[in-house]
Image (cartoon, rainbow, N blue to C red; front, side, top):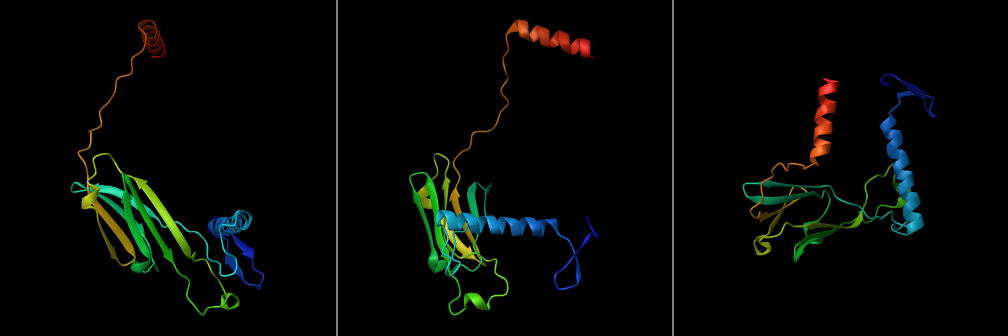
Length: 171
């Protein structure tokens, strides 16, 4: 696909990017659904968005990291109920910028909420959260995890013999 060119309305040639076409199509579909479902506010383009999150274990800690660029830590709320971790917040649009002054706009603003079920045995009273360089990091001591083990699948003896016979014929 590299090197494919298409005609630009401004009479210049540029390389065609199929992923840009897909992003544009997704953006249009999002706008359609937002208008249909009423999830977005069209006047200031404030819409629901979901920050990216990753979770892993490290040094007997269960770690959650959420990308929250442009979010003020004062606009974040981290809570835990029973076995559910809840991260809520809001990324606010800049005040004073008018819709007609934008040349291009892809950044989503508005409220978000993410929920995660924690494993049984988590000590929720030891949960800690810190916010550095737009990344919210939440840690909690991980409970003793059950180690994975292979489970043998049982089959009826007649079926097992048939499978072994078929395997010998194929070999």
